[in-house]
Image 1 (spheres, rainbow, N blue to C red):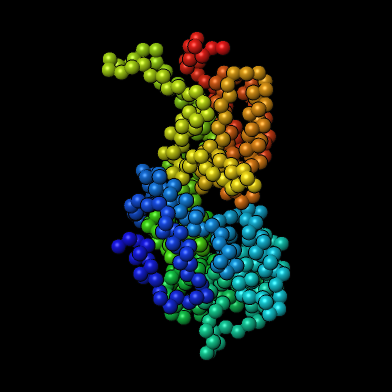
Image 2 (image 1 turned 180 degrees about the vertical axis):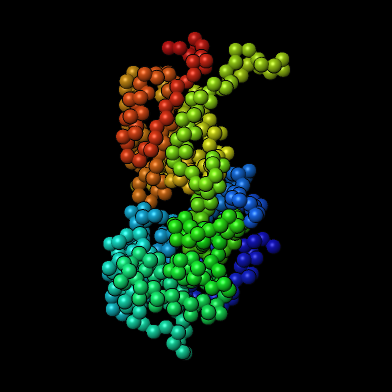
Length: 456
């Protein structure tokens, strides 16, 4: 039986409608490309193993998760807020959450809902300017009664709501945090002890208790799912082990939890980015933009073995000339260098549209929020260098816009005329552009002589 069919078949028929199992969203997930075989990493390995042998499948997995995690106005506001919060580290990076929080702060009286308080909790965790409205909403919540006999539970079993309040509380000052934390911990323990299914919602409730109690608060009977634990580890809210990360990878690559829709897909997308950083073959541990720059800076040295032969090396071969004649050839070369190191490397990445303009970056490493922009300089005067700087500046202003998912650019320039005396000044100009973390300029090696037919 196909995995998604199995997931649907096992779904709880009377699942509480408060949490809105998103069939339409999961159907979008099911329509995505075939993801290939499941990859299981052994829990006895010292580091999580993310396979790199099936790169198209890995890229399809990321794209599929991103499609499901995309904001949908249909779910309640705290579900949208969670999906935005789990994927970003600052409120400036998620204008949607800021908008939702501003709207929630303006609600008062009978129109106020527990979901509004949760939205403010997510926003307060990222930006202190929302702490005051969050505390006001928190006081309102604490005045309500929960687990009242004869009344169906709502907020007290709402994982997204409880978790939003928890992450807001951990950012409060001690005088305010103590009483609020004690109140919520009691509510969470009662909720976890109410014999609800061990599903995504229960995992969020356990995670809320774990965040408040320093990772040890979750009841043994209902643990935090490993995909959520890994996503929270990326935000520094929970610890994780190699075994937990391996299980998270198995869950994500196996499409486990697809029926949970937007919120779980967003958590899995954040977890996947963390796993890819953690398991890059560049070095053990996390990698950085600087690591990528160091690899690209070594390209000039690598060109010493670039095939450019005057005579065949063997009796059964012809003289090889690996020509680099345009920007696409340079991109191909960099892909061959970076793809084995960064499993989520993508090429010709379509970015967020700017009006009628649909920008497309050369190479992208989403887990590092990094774009590599390639420029090819042909022979010419000083204006050639100025044009490259202007092009990269224009790229940076377009590609690094709010909500694009990218914050850094490395400019890689191939100088086909080998004007090495100009490279230092060019690099200085590129490095002054906001968002450009490094600039690498590589000359066409002297051995790659095109001959008289290319000379003008």
